[in-house]
Amino acid sequence: MGKKTIAFLLTGGCAGCEMALVDLADRLVDALEHLEVVWWAPTVADLKYKDLEDMPDKSIDLAFIDGMVRLSEQEHMVKVLRQKAKILVAFGACAALGGIPGMGNLHTKDEIFKTVYFDTFSTDNPDGVVPQTKYLVDGKYELTLPEFYDTVRAIHQVVDVDYFVGGCPPHHEFVAKAVEAIIAGNLPPKGSWITSGKSVCDVCPRNPANKGETRTPIKEVKRTIEGAPEEDKCLLQQGYLCLGPITQGDCGASCPKVGIPCRGCGGPIPGIKDFGARAISAITSLLKDEKTVEQLMEKYPTIAKLFYRYSLPSALINRRISR
Image 1 (tube, rainbow, N blue to C red):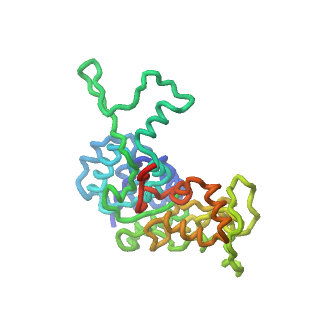
Image 2: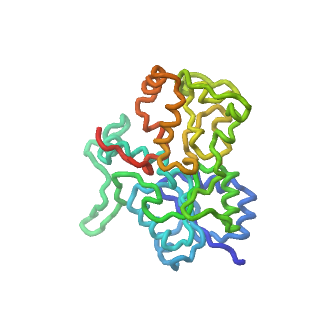
Image 3: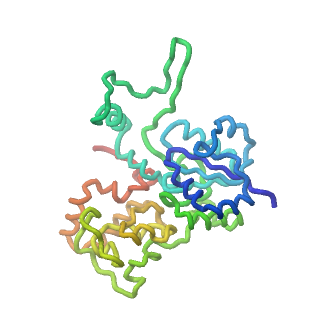
């Protein structure tokens, strides 16, 4: 068999997902024996839009997109890559769910611009200048900027996506397994997440069930700033709101192992359509009494920023409706 052609596109993200690929080190080098990278922009090569636009349709065997869509140029490039690729993978939390930038959907475009260009203490903008999509210089040179959309969207809300990979970023050990599965053609049905299918709790050494112990109700809600959790004891049992029960465990429970509660970047375990809604249901069902519920509301006044930290754009209600 000849080499598979492969492409990577970074949209509205931090490139951390691509760093997860680089973290494969020599295993990535071995994989390149089977792959020919024809596009990796803008992080690796200074390629131009036209370079991708001029490629024949379906000439790319496999394309990864990391990052969400907030700008018109991101939407354009995602649509172009979809046209050129046979298989498209939403790679990482931003691409698959909307990610951290998706919490911008709790605010309007005007509110965001007001904060960024006027209200911050370090901003010096006496003329009230904000970005414009078009500007004419000397009456003859038109400069353009991409349009900033009202909301953040995940990739599947813009184009058809074949497969999803969670994580912020995806754990490099799981990335290796995913790449190997793709090369071998050992893939689940279209539209599936490439995942082990296990939750973070399933693979977490702190889980009482994994140690033959019984889980007890949460008696007190704590934040991570309130002291270090006890070693080897379930974070939820100690009152730290960990979303491990409903999050994919392809990371190997990396955060809970070092005392950090899971925040859901791995994406929902199979069968869950709205991550935040299921997270609310799962966590509140573990709270002991009304007093504990009141603690939750007091310590997390904007509850959406906890339960929808990575997934708001892909939720059933994916933006703020009213103040």
